[in-house]
Image 1 (cartoon, rainbow, N blue to C red):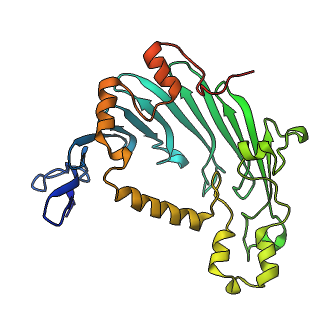
Image 2 (cartoon, rainbow, N blue to C red):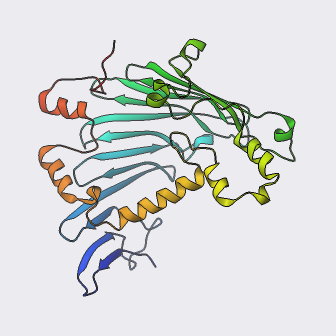
Image 3 (cartoon, rainbow, N blue to C red):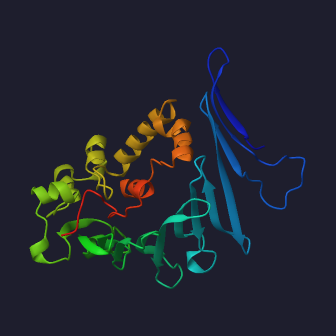
Length: 314
């Protein structure tokens, strides 16, 4: 049995909102697993339809194109052979006739079995101007990210982040196998040279980075206080988790906050991303809230600006 529609109604039976999918009829024999090509969302006033189109190569999905009600087409391309099968190779964003942005993902692997595929480079290209931004990743033998470099449009290196990990036998022994505990994180403005090191507590640290330099691990300090993880208070453990990159939370707190805010969002019938009026405006005036200010200026004036209109080179 397949769910084809979900309705939310009031206490009096009035339809408040709904989501439906156009799965094929069960009376017709299918040559493949049943799937839908359209999803329709009704917010109580307006309806919007998303169209899905999957392309297969050798029986495997090689591309998935999603067209939103405003006509924006997002296409995700996947590898269909080798050790990267099923992983994303690139993503494009644009209209049915014009590609505005391409995000390419380059992978690396050990070359053996298991291959341990991991991202080595993500490149974003603005198709109208050819400008590119990029993030590269380097790894140690345990597949921990040891260095990431962020390049702004024009491939100008703006930030290098390096991370060291505990590598003593007390952690790396096969009976322990704790391989992902960082001892120090260094953030540099540009290249990784001592003169570019961003010191914690400085204005640059507050504006440009999320983490600074850690001289001893939280785990070591907690062990000295509690002796064993069995005595560790749950709240202390939660707030002591290593922050997920780019956030101020550990995995547990991040999951909790994401779940809570997602519940608030999903329960809010007036949440702005569910407002189909925005999509109508987008289709009528070609103003999409997901476009950058530089893209909007170009669409209205024909003038090409740098991707971040608030920052000028030099």
